[in-house]
Amino acid sequence: MSQMPLQNPQQFFSVVINHLDKSYDGIEVLKGINLEVPQGQILGIIGKSGAGKSTLLRCLNGLEQPSSGTITIHGKLFTGIKESDRRKIQQDIGNVFQNSNLLSRLTVLENVMFPLNLLKVNSKIAHSKALQMLHLVGLKGKEDAYPGQLSGGQCQRVAIARALISDASLLLCDEFTSALDIETSLEILELLRDLNKRLGISIILITHDMGVVREICDEVCVLDQGRIVEKNDITSILLHTQNTVTKSLIRNLINKDLPHHLQEILLQKPKTNCDILVRLFFSSQTAGEPIISSIVKKYDIPINILFGNLDHIRKTAFGSLTIKIPYNIQIINKIMNYLEKRGVSSEIVGYLPQDGEMAWNS
Ligand SMILES: Nc1ncnc2c1ncn2[C@@H]1O[C@H](COP(=O)(O)OP(=O)(O)O)[C@@H](O)[C@H]1O
Ligand SMILES: [Mg+2]
Image (tube, rainbow, N blue to C red; front, side):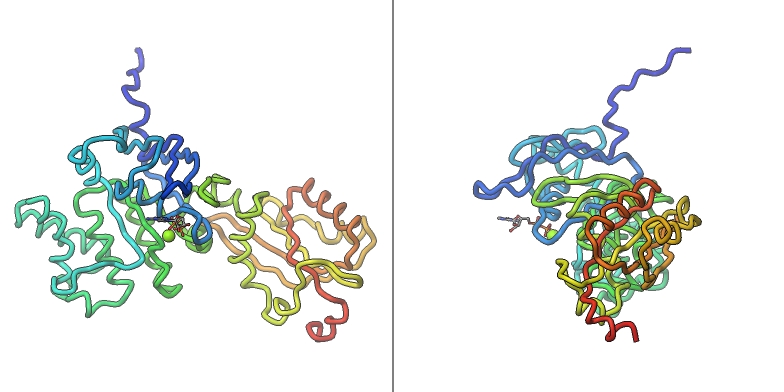
């Protein structure tokens, strides 16, 4: 039996971006962006402030037009087309932002129904659809409340229900959980993952926070100065990235483990008589190996283990261990090469003056 020919292979992707550039007044903000998001994927786009994340998202939701290049949404060309055609495709895209932008004079239910009213959908159908969406986001019983009576997390749930009510199959989130406390933010991310599974929607999540990305993203794309500098699955990014921009974003995540008193005296450059702090990353495969004792034997140096932790990236165990070694550049290079050969990623955290030892060893 012959296979059906693929009519349009791009339709298996929610989004395909080709050679996208965007300039404002001659200043290039996005440069040569190429990106494919398979249907059903949760993609995180991470980068520092000013990297171009929101601009990319505005190109994706049609609020901005790229200066050159193309965007295809579910196999349909989304750029360089008539306004009316673009609006049709936009119905398939839901947006949520840091501010939930709910209308304060409307009830929760009315807020969720709002996009369907604009589309002139029969009000009975809109009503029952809105109820269904509110249940889905965990807000059963809040239909008649007003946004002012809800918590920040509940407002974001309403915003999600509203974004998805016209059966959007692509959800774009810009710094969506930035204004929420950690616990609420985790609950909302959990909800997004649940909706992704239940409804099969693709999600593109933009954030400056690696902690957010780590929770739910299948793949991560690092944007720096308007370019994609890295794209990989989250485990590979956390364990094996060689990119300095990515490393600095991860450092924000992990440096929380470094005790405050050490952070205060940590040097960025070595000086005479100092120790070096090296952080090792273990994955499930390498976690059981006696790496530290092998290094002590092989290089005949004292190693102090400062602290370690075991964490999980989704279901994969992931550990880090921070060690202190007397600074000697030749030996450090040898150790780091040795670690790499054993499949353990490592990075230099910083340097500590040896005279500072009393302060933190006690
Ligand atoms: N409408 C605009 N006009 C001119 N410059 C802009 C505009 N929007 C964004 N920029 C510039 O583009 C760059 C990227 O901005 P943005 O996409 O908001 O970054 P991010 O969301 O990663 O913080 C910044 O330098 C910003 O000043
Ligand atoms: Mg932004």
